[in-house]
Image (cartoon, rainbow, N blue to C red; front, side, top):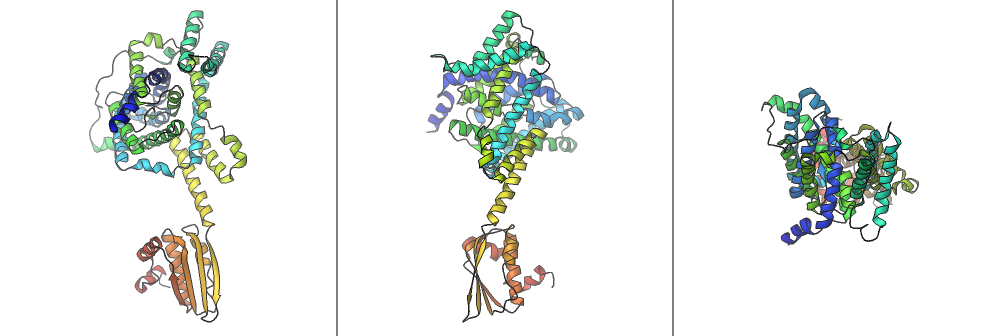
Length: 497
């Protein structure tokens, strides 16, 4: 069974994986160079990292067909470190980032993705689509009309080529776009911005490089905050991207294995002079839309990237940036969840606020982790508020025994605990009070404290109080934290009053 699944992951889609891998490798080159420039390091640092991370993650990652390499989100976090301490400390940070990610994998932090709601996911996707598009704008501002013509032609090829009979479905249209536009610019001698203008491409293969930093506590003090931030953002973007690719391909992935895989890939990158990276939603979408499904596509992308920049740099350097811009605009359009726009009219206000807040924070700060954290926090608050409204009480009175019965229904936790405690009429002239929680559930110590407060106050008013109907979970948390039946503890809780 394992052999069959491994064979399927590697060789179940050979032609599609090879062709899509070529497209991704070409698209990775300008991005890796651009991200190196953002981080303040030589272009080869990003190119080596992209090759290494893609090649390693193909074997150890938890999501087949997903592309990992140097990314803009990670590069933004490195700027201050490189400026203040230099490249060697960045390499040490990259290795530590990998170690932290492996630890996260063993702690099964991949399961935390279950706390990210669909609304936050949509906001994340839309924000990334906007960022991908915005990243192309420098190539479209203050340029000649040739650039706009080439970009428009590229988009035309991308969207129309698949409709051609026979070959339209066989060859990925982004690859055709890159070949055609490069041929046209060379043949006509059109002077436009090319990949070669982005920076010098490396001319040697990477070698093993252990960071030249002192192995002491001072070094750890410097690099640990950066490594922790990089590990968190890297895992967040990787797990979100894995979930998106899961949806696009209707397959599952191992999120905890992906955490470990990202860690191993970053350690390897740091040891050959590369910067930390993670999964790339843009390149992953290109891969999937170009027909890539298996691990072979990721490996091909990484290996071809290295071969092209080292051995075919003369050919790669003449590719017009307009061709790659058109590919990335296609990715932006394909990534954006267009159904979310009409959804603004039909979905609940709280859902729209969560989605828009995620988009705004990510686009404004360029910090994916901060945007997703904002979305998750708002979603949690809205959820807690919504659930708290489902707690209500049915009151009844038994005159023969002078008994007031409070029957609670719903969820009792920090957001509904005060309403629970305020439900009781403490001054009512009755002898007995029964608190029936058979259709309620106590979730936290705030709920238990509210029960303690109510019971103790009722008893101070001279009433006999019984709590009945506790389910096993409610019984457990009340036994552990409740004090209303523990006289020695009551005085502490009531503050001596």
